Length: 105
Image (cartoon, rainbow, N blue to C red):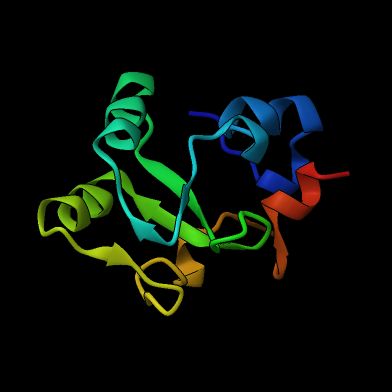
């Protein structure tokens, strides 16, 4: 078994591990629609980025399972949702560099 560190990966290799934010199926705070859930399932995505109501500020990531639960309970995504804003949901390179910053160059 070969081991590696993310720091040793080149840009192309990182892109094969992740879907760029521009290509992701994303959600905004508020209601979760059945259409978004169907799209996530169709693409096989297990997470979606969550943006504020303007769609300009990334709040965090939500699992498809979590979004399904919100939809089933007729709930809404909140800007204060601690499950979405959990920093452990982000992939980091090194100590403090989120992968979204690395790939945005």
